[in-house]
Amino acid sequence: MDGRLFHFDDEAQTGEVESDGKRYPFDFAQWRGRGLPSAGTPVRFELRDGQAIQVFNRPEAQRRASSTRGVDGKTRRKRLSHWALAAFVVSVVGLSAGRYAPVVEVVAIVLAWLGLRHVHRQPQRFNGYWLSGTAIAIAVGVTLWSQL
Image (cartoon, rainbow, N blue to C red; front, top):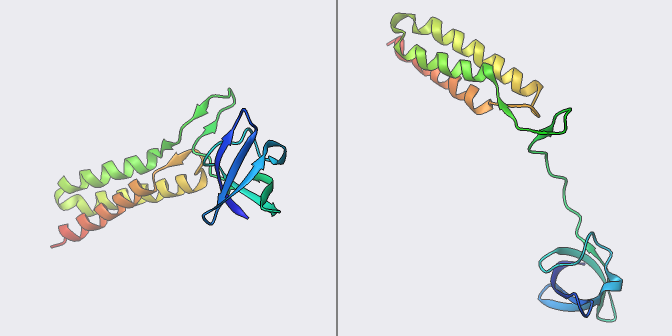
């Protein structure tokens, strides 16, 4: 069964598991989880004679890493793709390019494509999908607007 650890008394080495609105007592000898039991921990357990036995932490899906570590062991954060940033800047500059706007925006679209490729090839190191997409949207909008 699945439930939550309702409480655990460290001194008495006993606790209660709550599942479906019912509480089932257990003692520390039945704890099979990681670390010490604490209130609110999602658990999985079996029932025998109204007692919770074989109580352990509920398995969790593996979470994606939000950062990576370099060779020196220091945490490295994701960086913004320089291609995506260049695409955004060029697409905004295209707003004031006058009759050369379509040419400038084609350059912005190429840079945005390079930014998307950069992020796609190394997603653990770079982000910038949203910035490349915004650059493409601006480039298309400015090109269409300059043709009016």
